[in-house]
Image (cartoon, rainbow, N blue to C red; front, side):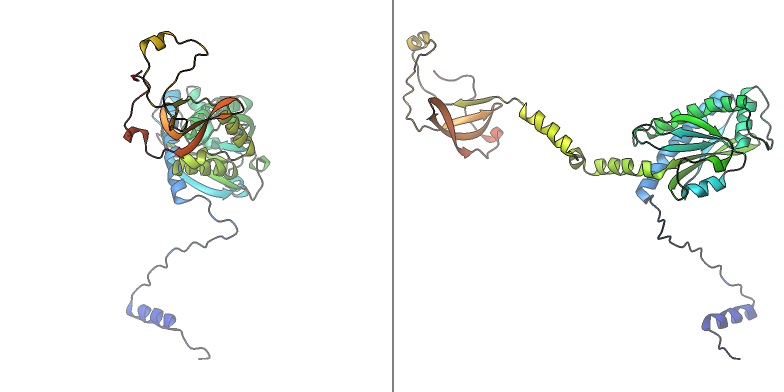
Length: 334
């Protein structure tokens, strides 16, 4: 032989001779460095919870609307390119393009597929809803009927996302040819949600395509706000800082300086009038306490500045006010 066998090939020959079957090779998925997955485990768990709640809402709505027991389950949540999503749609399809709102500024697609759309139309018009393979596109009347289901579906989608994302979806147009969908570039990353609808002997899929670029930043902000609420409350722009500065400059605080207790006779108290000067008996450098909103914050002395009586801070009070003993504003001895 011109080439020696490797140890792996020798082991395979020995197992084949002894009648043993080789163990199946494990499934290995190659990591795509060009388009890595952007849905982390934590975010995937949050998405599953939101979309499962959405599927339950859809089940209740369709059951009451069509008046038959319908089971709606979350079949899959995947990340794919927009071109891959378009290729997965059947032709003709029953796809509705919708906007996510002015804040997100993007578009999505909800595809009922022709068999699901035919099942909905048949049930809404009182038919038995028997499975059939529809090879044509929807008529204008059928598009209008299914559009009402699509609008309610988007309302339920908005309610399911309201705790995580400010979404205001609105239907815009209908498309029966998948290649005519142009809401994003072919290489743009999309979140593809698949719901399985089952009733009696019928089973079909409803597919919703959402742009990852519009969902990623709000989800990151929501996660950061949960992890660090104080940091998330800080302003991120110069306009935010300026607005907070204006609020701080307009804030009002009660500041009062309190001199030590001194005695005053009832006659002097009765003779008090504007402009009257009282002799406290204290020296000029007696310590004065400065209270801010009835809390002791500073200590200092009185002085004069340009013919005005002023207060000079000499010490910051570090002891919490609750641990200090002293007289309050009321009950002073005069």
